[in-house]
Every structure is written in C-alpha cells, then in structure tokens.
Length: 174
Image 1 (cartoon, rainbow, N blue to C red):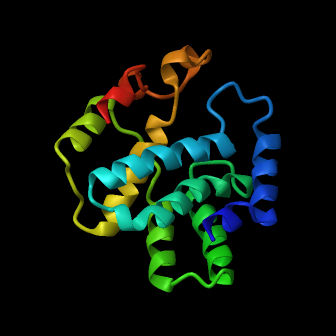
Image 2: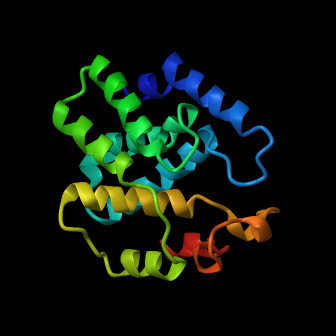
C-alpha cells in the first residue's frame, strides 16, 4: 500500500509544485530524490534501534515530511505536511495510531544539530522520552544526513552553521 500512497496523484502534484518553487534554488532541494534518501537513511537508523516493525511508517514519514512546502514555503511547513498526510492516510484507512505517530514525527522533525551530536546520538543509541519523540529525532537526523554538504556548490552561501554541515564520510558512521 505504501507504493500506492507515494504514487498518489495528489502527492505527486504537490511535489511538482515544490519543484516549480525551487527551480532556481541553488541550495538543497525538497524533491522526490530527497524523500527517497531520507527514507533509506531513516530505515537504517530505525532498524539499528530495533524498530524493524515500523518500516512502512518510516517510509511514509520520509516521503511526506516536506510536502507542506507546496502550501507554505517556510519553517512552518511541518504542520502543512502533517495535515496533508493525515487526510491522505485517512482516505487509505490507515490506523489512527499510525497516522498520529507519522504526523507527530513530521510536525517535530525540523531543526538541525551539529554533526558530532548526530553521531553521538547514533553511536550511543540514545532515545527520547517517548517513541513519538524518538521517531521525530530519527526523522530529523535522517533529513539532515541526506544533505550532501561536502559537495554542494552553494556550501559557502548556506545558512547552516559549519558544524551542522554533513561531511563526506557520514555513511561510514551509521
């Protein structure tokens, strides 16, 4: 069912809107490839935490975490993203508990941390106070790790602090 959802014409339409908004953007894009990369990283991180049973939810969180940028292209896109995915998942008759977990993680995924803090979190298998907060943190980390800062042509112009930019060897660390 996940493939059907991430192929839904409404979702793809919103991705097209984001693509149009970002057509002249020199920084990281929020396109399908970004979502796919976030999904791959989040799947690895969640399996390391023993959250294998949640792979479907992990994929959905990843693919929908930035879709709200089609409606609101600023730092408050999280709420628009979770509102959109909630309506879509309810139409697909997803369990309310799963919808809530996905929406919570998406609503709370924004923000960056230093690359060292990311590796500390991963290496020490740190967890948050609740499963919802753990998923939000893992989504935040996957989102940040998906960025190829080390080869970005706009690196010097990027608003991220130098310590937040992802280095080339990150894949060896997870």
